[in-house]
Length: 630
Image 1 (spheres, rainbow, N blue to C red):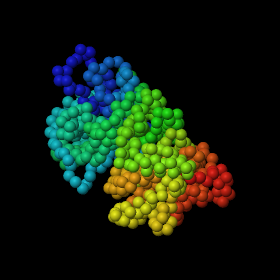
Image 2 (cartoon, helix red, strand yellow; image 1 turned 180 degrees about the horizontal axis):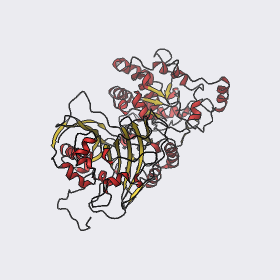
Image 3 (cartoon, helix red, strand yellow; image 1 turned 90 degrees about the vertical axis):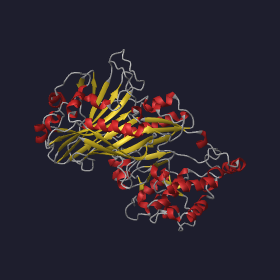
Image 4 (cartoon, rainbow, N blue to C red; image 1 turned 135 degrees about the vertical axis):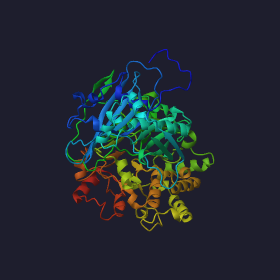
């Protein structure tokens, strides 16, 4: 671009979805040979026959914008690209691709995912699906209420010809005979053409054309009508929209998708979202540089994988760690293990929270360990320390009482004892070769845990009575198929002290944000027990899950090897072998005297029972001391 370029409009900017077209022409400004770009030897994919350019259509497209494109570019831009999924069905083969646009400054500007369908192509001659990465899964439009916005766009008859300037010279978009032979009835508009029209229409309708508001945009590929619903807020504070685009000429639905737009203040006004992407690194195996293409395809096994999704899928989830600057070494250790054992294949975003600003050293060393997005949040003082209405004399007396009783964290003035998942200085012992987030989403699970133990009675003398007061006021929140048997051994009269250890927990945030838990927490907070006693988040979370959820919605992750402090869960039997676990098989807390796992098992007499030979239990009791730990 001309270095002297100066726009007349100060708001002039590159359209945010522009990077999706770069893979077509790279830095070539001339017409390209589309067939050669698809069928040339340098584009062949090991294990697949050559693609048929006349029968290729754009399937899905997703972009996440991490940094706006500059108006003036230069040398040194790179587009890293790799194949992350191959799927075969009776109609053809779908190829999933991942791209990362990196500027001369070494920073990532956008991450892209796309899928392409080659109609009639056969690779293995049977259903096959394998995926090693992919875009987030879009939430479906709500069925119970009308869209918040609707707009109609008229597409010009020559639009498919004009859109060839993007580099998509596929003859399917200009020659009717090719479109008929491919089964599309004639010329069709490029998928990215529709994609761009809808992106522009949404920006114009929702945020008055502010292109900088677009965070992420994804879809599946005349006159277009688009309906838009607000479906939630992402973990990093962006409003999430779901939309459906219908071709009014044919009556068919074209685009359906995912959109993250205009950031809101979710965590606090101090939450630093700009730092999320500054230190991202990449180790992709292939890249495009200065128009020269170099591709290395990761090997994909040829055996059938019927459990793999047919399109790239990922849950709307994040990994959260509460850590201080002085805990850097422990945070790095935990993060590295979880990345190596699980997240390097899924790239779920990380969120670090602290009650003070994270140091540049903390950000540098943690962000370099992952290819995923990393955010660093500052917890406001009012959310960290006890509120002004608390009687400090009474709170101090309570802390001193616990100190005399030698209770851990007795003199903490923060109030609730807060844990996160994962914590610094923990261990992950086994390979996690599936997506626990997606598993919980697909199976309707709301809360997952790894260890269960008893709480210190001294820290919660009035908690259960306060819980009973709440359930008397709100019996409508109690689930009829609850897990009360885990929480109480006498029908609810007293608390068993059993709780799910929240140092490792996976939970649906909609539950914590929901009506039942919000009312429950407000009731507990007003009672003051977080400050006058030392109610911890583990029993509070556990009691809420045990009472307000069906016991079927609570999941024990028996296959995830994990250690915190001196307690560890080590998978038993075949799970130890299949997970390539390196923990001591006999060093397992599951059925020690202070463990509550047996009480959880009792809720499911057949399904969750784990038989441990008597001699192994005996050895385990010698290895792991019986303790109570919060």
